[in-house]
Image (cartoon, rainbow, N blue to C red; front, side, top):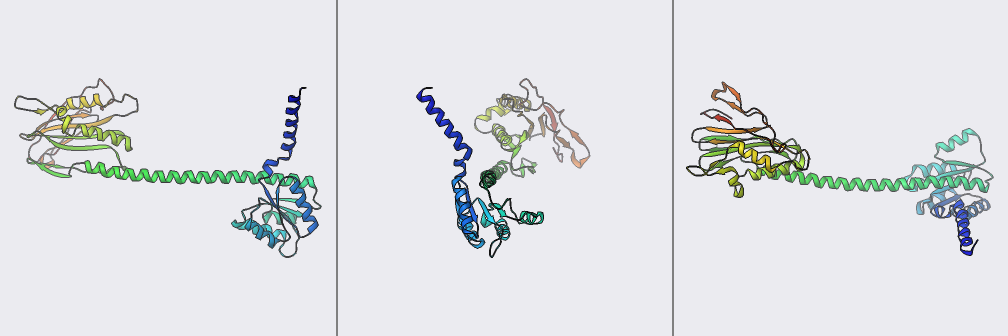
Amino acid sequence: MDKHARLEEKKGASAVDEGSREPREQLAINVLVVEDNDSERWRLSAMLTKLGYGVREAANADEALSTQLQAPSDIVVSDWRMPGMSGLELCAAMKTEADYRQPYFIMLTGMTNPVDLIAGMEAGADDFIAKPCEAEVLRVRVQAGARIQRLRGEQEHNNRLMRQLLLKERRAMNKIREDLELAAEVQQDLLPHAHARIDGYAVSTLFRPAQEVGGDFFNYFQLGPHHLGFYLLDVSGHGVAAAMMSFSIAYQLSGDGDSAGFLMQPGEQGPEPVSPASVVATLNERFQDRHDRGRYFTMVYGVLDMRDGSGQLCQAGHPNPLLIEAGNTTVSKLGDGGLPAGMFEDASFKDTPFHLRPGDRL
């Protein structure tokens, strides 16, 4: 065996010896020895120090309580019978008051009566060592307590991390909720006036959202001097994603700027509205769900000629519009369902004619 190999073997043997004593882990554990007999207290302290623990001493229960408050120890090894407050009373005090950090409590006792042991456990004692205390017994009992205290420490650390994460998540959720409330206000601000009269036609609206924001939207607007456009749409899903898509569709249908050519076309007597079916077909092409996210929308888009009350609408998977004649004598469903938009590239849409007379409602 060469010199390098012998050196590595020596290091390995040293590591094994040190591992058997667990000095690195034990240095993180402090033990408070409570014993009124000086020689016994010094003996216990010497054994624990040799095992690698940090040791503090107290000659009685009052001194132990004071020491534990000022510099908490992880493990307390205490005699049962002491002048003044007994070890049993000391254990009960430390286990019931949070200020004492709940140490692992080992009771030193010469009493083996089951009744006494039960009283000690009810007071909160975690373990017992019979007197006279042997070094090996002390080692394994304190070692067991050290393991438990480390596990408790890890659990408390994890609990603190969890509380911090929950607090962080709660703050994030509050911020999201505030943003959603603001988005809901913006969405409602974009909706048209609830009541309006346009060239003898009355328009009324009602909006009651199920959530802060969603994919529902509607509007009405003039298309040239003689026509009124209107629509009602519902994007699949809920929340911000659906709301953003509905905003985008609503912008396409706003009739302003670049979208003017999308809704109007040249006619013999000037610009005239594009048929509702053609408008929905264009929206279907522009808003195809090319990433398979399950996004589509249903809608009704219509155009009314305010000069004579004639009109056309396209139903794309949305509930049927209802035409209610004056006096509520007849209610007719318009359209035959149709396919939702944004779902199939080759979907076809058709127009449904209608006519509004004085007193009729759509």
